[in-house]
Image 1 (cartoon, one colour):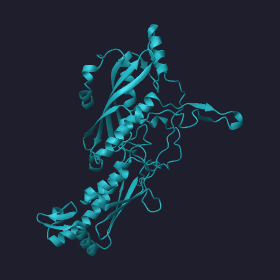
Image 2 (tube, one colour):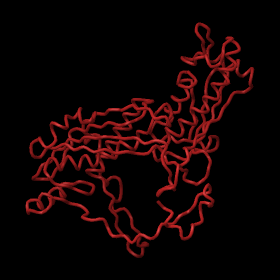
Image 3 (cartoon, rainbow, N blue to C red):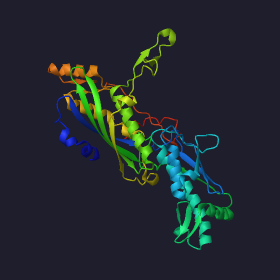
Image 4 (tube, rainbow, N blue to C red):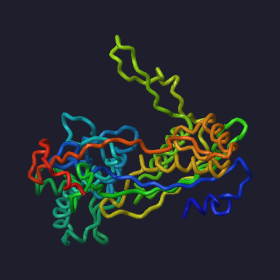
Length: 397
């Protein structure tokens, strides 16, 4: 509803002059796979916390920061639970020598799995500190509030560092660990080797396109996108992730293409990328980016840390079909393959002028003689995760 209203889609769809159009599309994406890449019952992410007497918190986690902002999310989650300033939380991440295992930055899994592990570890430390502080303030631990670097009840309070000191006197050196693994699948189904995600995000996108019929040239002046993020932990980073997905989706829609060539026999006959380097591989630049109207929809998910879901990959998905739909609204032709280029536009217009369907792209799904599926039972179903189960194709549902 947000993108439809903000783009005035209902009053513009099929009503703009020839050569201009709007298209809409929706998509959904997972927040991490339900099963680890190596089948086992171990956690997919672990977090360790260490408290020193100054009230500083050090977080150890194997999650890798690749530009998506996972370190900031980790700091924010720990700071929120303990009620401290984020500047008092230090991250040590991605060091396999000293951090707990994390399975990697893929499938938009990091916020959910790392965040839940961090909450578990932080809550353990919070409980220790609350127990010791409650004795000093002569109050029940569950009546204490952790906020703004203090632990307090009504008008009585201690600084977080003071509370940490009392906790260390009572319990010794303070540290805690947390881990996370998704809930087990409720049943068997096709694709169970990956498993259901703990949560799913949803995105809607409207694209405005202008097409020059004589040249086939496509321009996109504006994109509206709304992403169901659960809860926004860092609004600036979240918007950056969503708009980065818009950039990637538009680049794939209009420019990027995987084309391969075969090497000669004396060079192994292998297939290699036809484009020799990124200099020749065309993708959007900042000069090509349209105006983007971004809306973050907050509907906290109970399976996620403070309700926060992914925002890194899901918003990419509806951009490409929305571009194709906008082109169809603009000039009445369908391009069913990417990238959507001027030559394909001109070919589709030529077919339409000949009285044929104005459509370019695959005209059927290839007939592939798929073999019977192989079933490899995981350990919790009596298998070893390696041996194929014989004569059980019918078990896949």
